[in-house]
Length: 75
Image 1: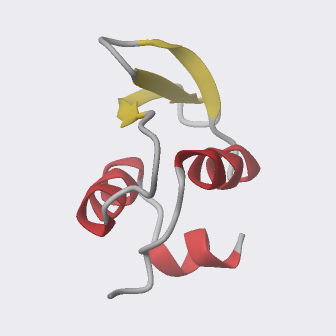
Image 2: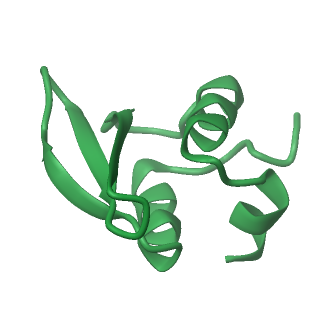
Image 3: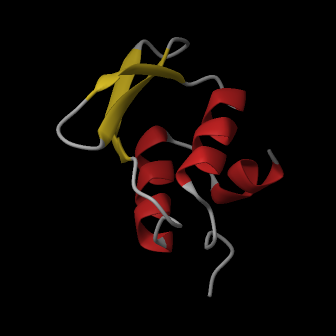
């Protein structure tokens, strides 16, 4: 198990909001698109599923939005 395991959707969203991200709109099914007003850019969809998000999925999301795992873990 890595450091990025055990994070639920709610915890991930709370941390992304602290880093300046905002909800933009709903996507297909249970996915959402988030926006960073500082960079004026939309980011790939975030799955809104029950339970913990798989570590690989969370790592991919962080890579796409340009956040280092260490910064995400400090929030």
